[in-house]
Length: 391
Image (cartoon, rainbow, N blue to C red; front, side, top):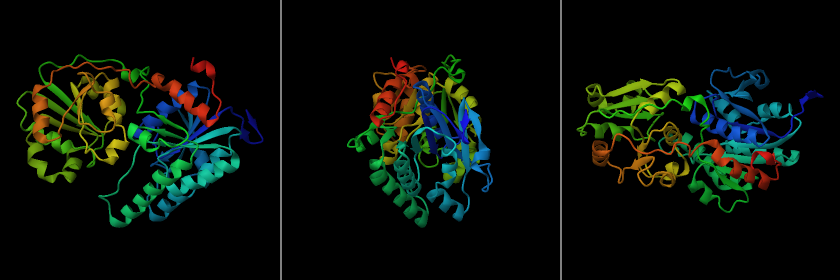
């Protein structure tokens, strides 16, 4: 119903951030899973994300669309310097959407830029709207250009150490962040989740027992040490196949040009480039193991790998090292195997010796496991929920 030009909705939660709906980045999967719980406890969730296909002069209200029953809007992704300045500092476009709704109870800012977050905090206080954050990372710009590094690190410092502590509540993706913000008045730990009832997670495959099938799926940059996995494979004696999804061979060699001869001669390593998410899941389901390795630094401790939750939901164990709080989920020969210490020879040794199958508890990240903790979080925020949903 529309009254006075505004939509009269009960319990509107506005979710804002750099996610590319419906499934173009890990952030999109994160917020959609969270929103399904919010919907179940009686809230209407409206998204404002980003869209790289939009021209810069696009009107945000003209971008209205729906994804899985959720109303979504988008702002253009900045490309030029002046566009970046506006993106990092202005909230006027978002307010156009806010004014469409009569009953916005909460705004959740996903890994949001500091100056704009401060403006939202002031706006929400004036309008008596709860302002919360969904925090899934602690970014580092140490390998970037000097000017960018200074700006990015300043933004991150102010947001992580000052602004978040002033918000009404924090949704954090890792135990590391939960401990860091333990003095905050309202915090809830919510790892990467999946909706196990969706058809894309169904249709498990029998695992190969003759060729060890390994998969890496993601955009590694220098964060995921795919290079160590590839170097290790040259010393593996058993039959294997490694499918790398998310980057092309050419993109990989931009980072590791010295691996050119190694990968071009190895027909057991196949680069697939970027493919549809649902196709990626089929490769993960068929694999004996999903593999990813990361440096054990603050960046990795603060996050929680989407590729881990997705592999487990697909019924595929992982080969990885101890980062984030993965040790809460990998133990007693279930869900995966840790490679410690992380080095090329250890990776090769483990791959040579792992069984073709390992027990996987594939529903541990299902959204239904987190309904009660989410509900308690909203109660502490002073936001009413549908109590029938959590009994």
